[in-house]
Length: 265
Image (cartoon, rainbow, N blue to C red; front, top):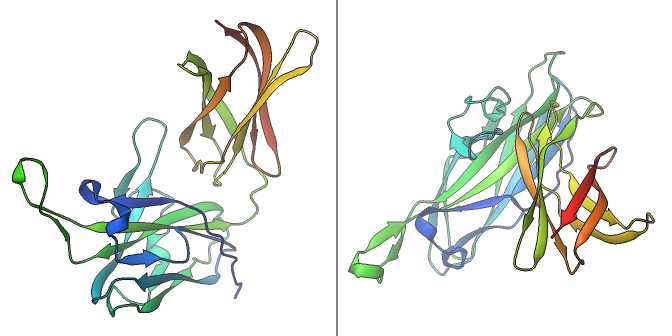
């Protein structure tokens, strides 16, 4: 058996009908992304730490969903097995529902049983959904209509199988737009490999002598196999003119870069 490593990073809190996170009485202490590295045939153990910070008991529901992303549609949350790299059928969880007493902390445990198939490689992923069963009442809405809203957390579980050396990330489109503050380069990064990539995008502008005029960086985003992510790199307080530029996606082991010529008007 091979143990995994787990890292945490912000993913997404799903708030039905615009409910604010400040209303949540059950919170996730361990972060909203669990990442594992393993091999075919291994069993992985992981956990999600929860706490009821309210003064009354709360019942939670636990279930699985697939996160579906591609380059043409918005992200959606679908039944397990919807995409070919779903992890959900391999996950076993310690419970499907739990009542948390006031101030109680609870550790939701799960196992991932990776099939013993030597052809398995790449990133596989699904979501563990934590839903507070009792809806929050919103009694003072516009037009006097009372509505009930439920809070759900999506904890992303990612498993990388095998070596992720062969990563292929490219900029499929790059465009320049003018804003009130200056300009912004909008670049779409497309992941053509089988592994999740988390690049940081850096834009460097040069003057006619090759000196750096400005260097801008935007934080990393997850780009799933077969999907795209848009990065917006701001360019501010730069005088009008023509500039050579280098746009780079830095994802740890490798860099992918493209040369640009920008006309700032």
